[in-house]
Length: 359
Ligand code: GDP
Ligand code: MN
Image (tube, rainbow, N blue to C red):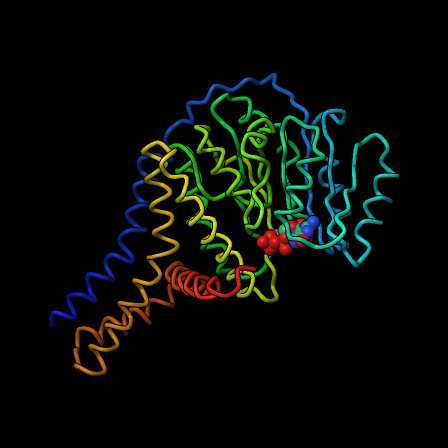
């Protein structure tokens, strides 16, 4: 019987902590005003860095999408950093640039593929803007005033970096449930102080702060998130605002592989971020600790309580444990719960994979 109690406690911890965190942020912080002093006249020079590796299918639409933005053309430059694509991406960029002479588009070619972080690092060296924005080739900025919106937030002295919330486009419906939960966390954490998780679909930084941290960090899968947290360690805020929204095309093929790779990057990022924690204020300390707990430890608690429950059911013939297992399985019909369980599996697989392949 005491084993059953342990399983019950583990279940409560696994579901209780994320739920309590969610409710706390949603009730206490989400409704709060931003309390930031905005300067509407601020119109800095912007460099948009687009790292590409074999993006021939998307790059033209991506350049058009940036071109359509409502921002003074003479204050905007685009840097496509291509890492030896083999599908003709660089040529498409050059052709596009020739047809749009009123717009600064530069192509930087890396001689070999060294990953997205390295491409951002290279892009940073060439960037002339006061604000550096990084964005994936497959991310579409549906709103045309998004740059103005970004600049508005960055006009505040306290804000060092800003990223977007994501609207999934196509693909698995699981992704939608997952996003609803996480978008609320990101915004509420940002209002509380800062959020440790940025998105490659759009992340913007003050150049002078990127310089102070030595440019984009190398050797990580989510350089934009780590850059934001290094800037937060200097005392600046790294936020995600609810009116900066980017659509992301969700891959239909290899969705599982994609999610696991992202989880791998996120876990490595959170572990690195823990090493800056002494520089954070108390609020951000709590946020980083809870996020690290949720992504790294909490999934193991689910696994552990499942094992204990199975042991109680199969070996000790416990009715209570058996009922809990059946309840846990029946609840899979509920979409939010289903999405949660799957994401816990992805996090577990990601940690196991990180042991030998950090990709
Ligand atoms: P995901 O968003 O995590 O699925 O990653 P993506 O595959 O969309 O990659 C993000 C962006 O980085 C895309 O624009 C890719 O083309 C680009 N990218 C990925 N690997 C490399 C690389 O090695 N070099 C460069 N320059 N860009 C890369
Ligand atoms: Mn992408």
